[in-house]
Image (cartoon, rainbow, N blue to C red; front, side, top):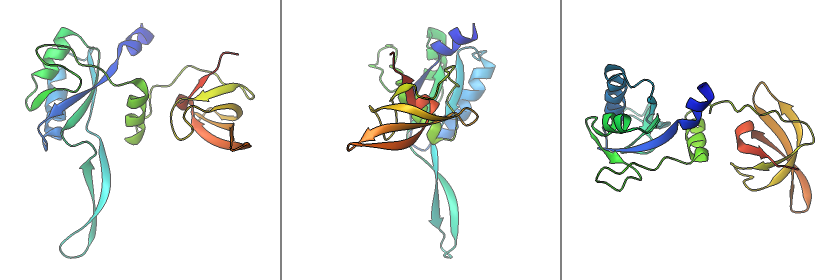
Length: 186
């Protein structure tokens, strides 16, 4: 049942009024609880990055800025009720990928969602995959995208693999996360 639920969860992007992203996230989080939508709407994220800014006195301070001004990311199972709750949250202007007039929006691709979560320091859901040394894998995300390599080392605790890929006629070692590779059927 839990795996079935996980497979239905998808990430969607909301349009908001710029500057209201955190207020929308706060409002949506409270609406999820008050309207009993905990089984349909799971996480609300406003992607932020830390930047160093100089004050008028010349001191440096760390400030958090929105990575995508005007957008909020929501993990949910799309249903009429969930769509209604999210769409009617104050300061939400719509969904990215929705063509208006009640049409349901298009979710993010899984690799886009994983990249977003990693950029925010949030790990993606653990994959139930076992890798073996010597196994052939294809890189599906990151700098080595599309390359095929062989597993050289496995760090199960950190969910990282050391793989060897061929670049410019030489074998090169690369470290990747479990969710950046897929097994190739041999």
